[in-house]
Image 1: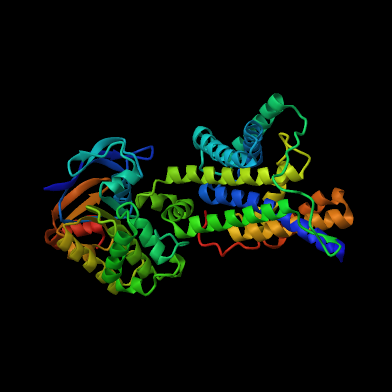
Image 2: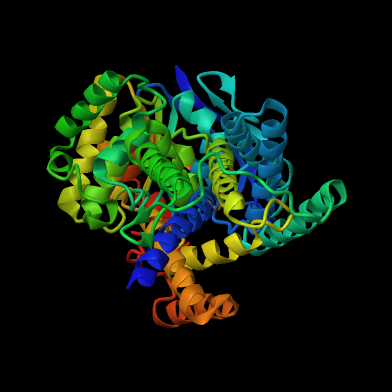
Amino acid sequence: MTMLAVEGLTVGYGGSPVIDGLALDVPQGSVVALLGANGAGKTTLLRTLSGLVTPRSGRVLLDGADLAGVRVEDRVRRGLAQVPEGRSVVSELTVEENLQLGALWRHRSRGERRAALDEMYELFEPLARRRTSIGHQLSGGERQMLALARALVARPRVLLLDEPSLGLAPRVVAQLLAVLRQTADRTGLTVLLAEQNVTSALSIADRGVVLGLGAVVADAPAADIAADPALRHAYLGF
Amino acid sequence: MDRLVFLLATGLARGLVIALFALSLVIIWRAARIVNFAQAAMAVVAVYVAFAVTSLTGSYWVGLVAALAAGALLGLVVERGLIRLVPSRTPLPGMIVAIGLVMVLQSVMGILFGPRHKPMSAPFDERPFVVGSIPVLSPYDLFVLLVALVVVVALALLFNRTALGLQLRASAVAPEVSRLLGVRVPRMVTLGWMLSSAVAALAALLLVPTELGLNAHSADLLFVHAFTVAVLGGLDSPPGALVGGVTVGVLISLVTGYLGAGIVPLAVLALLTLVLLVRPGGIFAVKEARTA
């Protein structure tokens, strides 16, 4: 069953489009790696899906419902969460406050929020030790962990992740991606993972989608993408 | 010595009103990244409402509540009806529109109510208690002190202890990330304006009985002093607004007492220049965590 569908999506900031007539199906409960070189349109696609960017044409459907005209904060409330690229942790707030912020709309009562936060502290053990640290005191790995936990605490149906491995040590990347895979298996979370780190992303993904100049050039099981030397050479740069 | 004690006490009471107004500038800066130059004119409109309500009902307290409500309502109308329509990519257009709003509001008030200062009476005695042979604070000064204290504590609790406060703080520093977490950022900006305008209205209401009376320009000087305080303390820092307000209040009082009232604007300007030269981010400015 399709959880997230994209049909004929065209996005541009003026001039030639960044995303050009793109179509994509993400089945419920699957982890899909979104691959492609710099400038292929990965970030623009994710920002369009979350509503930060308005497309010129085309449709985005979440569990069958058209998201046209639905504001960013309301898409989140429908279960579509995005972890943006880079340091998205609110650096003026503590770890605890960042998590609270992510949990507010989903868990109305204080008790419920407490339980949801404790669950995240269990899942991301290093964060538990840094509850009262301010965002900008955290290491890069801790920040990415917090950004992920902050999105998961609201129990989204679909999670869009933009380059979670950026600037992190391989061991930390492996840990983060393992948690992601486990969460998808355990809760049925659907994940669209944009990554430059192709090998790591494909190692946990069910499927790989390769973008080239704003369109899908390959869409196949992760193992097939990893094993296709021509594809790797042409679009993934190794 | 007696004179010094008297001047310090007066400065404290005046300083708290300035601090409250500066706090309103800090709130709006934190919520919307704008220095609201129309804050004084808007506050005076709210005080006119309080004046009318008090005249009709005979109760200062109903007037006070009316001032808060009018302030909040005015903040809502100005943000939704005016500021939201202005491009916000840079802070300048918003500031210019705010300055335009000052002219419109003050002209309209001038046309409606004339240039005369309407005397407004204080709810408490304004004659100072005499301790030993030194006149210190009046009952009204103590009332101002108490109100300022209550407002400051209430705001601190709101911002640091409630879910709403958390959303207000987050959407101010990281609007995009906040939206991605489901925070209704535009609503938070509007609430910031309402809160700020209500606090400014309260400060103006507390000030007027100690001045000549109510007129369209009653809060102009208050704005200048509070702006100095906000820059002095750092536009981002509520404790800075508080300490800065009292500092400037005492400075004004001392300069008035020892050098004459004519020197006050010069002293305030000198202080502002000094702070801008030595610590442009404000004395209480925290280390810049992000560039915005």
